[in-house]
Image (cartoon, rainbow, N blue to C red; front, side, top):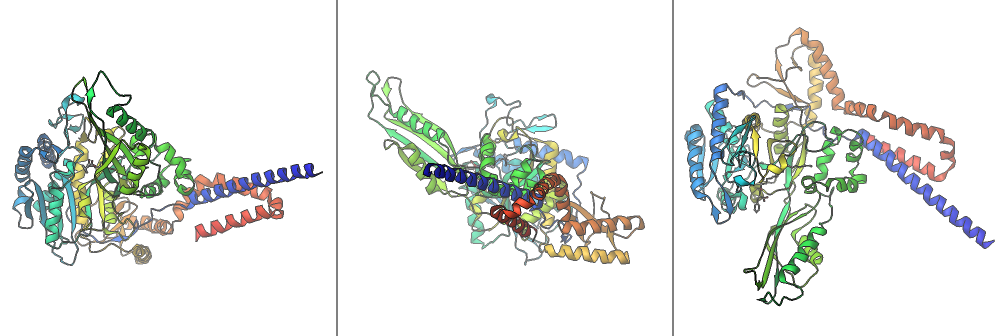
Length: 636
Ligand SMILES: CCCCCCCCCCCCCCCCCC(=O)N[C@@H](Cc1ccccc1)C(=O)O
């Protein structure tokens, strides 16, 4: 009897547990589907009413096209290589200084620009604005490059700037002479065309970024601190436009770095008494150290995907993935471990998930028949924003787990603060607007910069630091950073010049439009429809607005106001009507609804079929109640 009732109880328990699990899975599925359906973090200022700042059109004629390319190629041909803190090619840096003066004569002679050489080879430019109330911003780039050896497999010599199939090959083409030359070329053209800024700005060009920026960037910061400068934002190198790099993503993505990983360099060393190689001990200093290094490689740091700003990247891009990835990306709360497992398979995506461990130097031994006394290895770690230098050191110590291996922190810094990227963020939104005007097909998202930049020295001067240049990175290009066959397309270099040209003008905006102004814009333009006093040409994608006119920014397309003309009234009516719904977020919901209607219908059918049993079962009733509550929260 007892036996039977015991069996019965176990069966009942198994039933309840499995039923409970089923309910949990069902609730998660319903919640995830609903979130996918409603999830879109991209509303921002897309419909906002932007103050007009771009009065000078950025068109480039045939002569300028040749000129800017020739300037860029000359810059690539100068081998401004930084090998270590004490090994900089100062001859090349001096030559680069002369090149800048030669190719940008207006920048160096304009009364609007003040210039200062810092630490012998770095450059600081200051272009004061006419409106002193506007807080200045700063553009950064670096002149130096990492070493390059032609014999490593370069298709063209690394300092030849050879042109092949529409690309310029050479060290520094994407890291980072494209920005150095792009920024100054843009300023040169702006000044030639009579531009004078309303908002002042600085340009800082470091000469030793590749070895830490301790001379260039740090001294520029000192100069600025002395002057009491505070910056609205800083824009430095870092992330890029990724085209076809993130698998499953529809269209290119511009990732603007809002933070960068921390870094630590750790020296591991093993000391043993030297001796004759004919009488070796069971374990040598090299063997012990090799074991420690192997353990570090076999035990990577934990996946922290979703715990840093990389989470925001995928949330912003979720709507641009097809099913089923969209479902996963919209529900990081549920799927981040799964996404992490997939992403860790490739080194460039793995870098976003965790603190990476790279053994970069290993030294030991002096002679073939002498047992080495000392074996040393250097480990370079790039620290995920959810960890600190201290935590990383503790992890290494416990993974090595051998007291004979001494550990020493050579240098290190924690991950950098996260800059703002919401709709009130001046720097982020101005960069975004400039980008979307130029590349309407691109999705813009905040990102984590996995390498380090000079901008990390600027944290006392600016709360908001962004790491981005519109360099287009296609599959296979990530290996070109510090690797072989570094290159940029001629078209892309021109685009960079245009980007900085437009960005500098866009920064003249006094303040960001309020997102609520969008409502006003829609309402007022609806009003305008009645009077037919004003309207925009929605189909026009290229524009040269009149001075002082108002520019609208709708989903990346700029629209200029012009005199009313009857054939467009209907289109304007339709636009305003669509904008109204877009503003309410209804259009994205409708699009999502279409793609998810099948799963929603299936769920509804299941609920209707099982309505009676659901209502008579306490657990199912609670489950349904919770789902309805969840929908309520989502929709409100
Ligand atoms: C979400 C999926 C993304 C897929 C891959 C995206 C890759 C995007 C390109 C990444 C390139 C990162 C380059 C950033 C610039 C780094 C510049 C640099 O090399 N800096 C040095 C600075 C340094 C710092 C401290 C000591 C010595 C040197 C660096 O080593 O980080």
